[in-house]
Image (cartoon, rainbow, N blue to C red; front, side, top):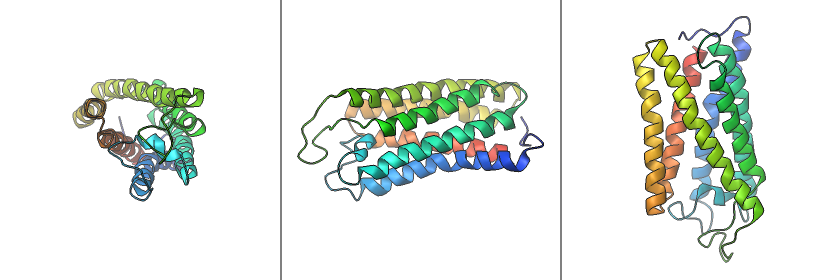
Length: 208
């Protein structure tokens, strides 16, 4: 694969890819900014989705929606930059699905859990169930996308990128396993950061 963007839309494609380069780091940065400033929120005990609840929850809702939209925009840029060849169809489609999942997660709020918001009992609601399905769908789409891109890098003999594309999902699955086995959601955020770095690096590579 070359880093040359598809003509004649070089500049516009670059702007679309810039959206993808920003989306992941922005999402993680906004989560961290809230995690250490919201009363009663503990990143070790509460999933990041809980930030969408209570006073100030609008910021995390906006974070989901904006970063989801940026991801969808990036998918268009990926499609243009990857043509022709492997991953040019399903890679962008799967990335776009991940963006849609983020938006759905913002529209449908998570249920209260582990005493957050403070004084709110745990509950299970329809919108909470829909919310929990969104990251599951997005996560599966992301894992399949890694396979699709790995095939492209393998065909193009880009060994460094192939190794990075194989290592990233393995690390993400490991952090998720740690999070669920220890109920320490900080591990899950580390997985989010790994995914963000991979996506950002890919978009920057394709921008040239």
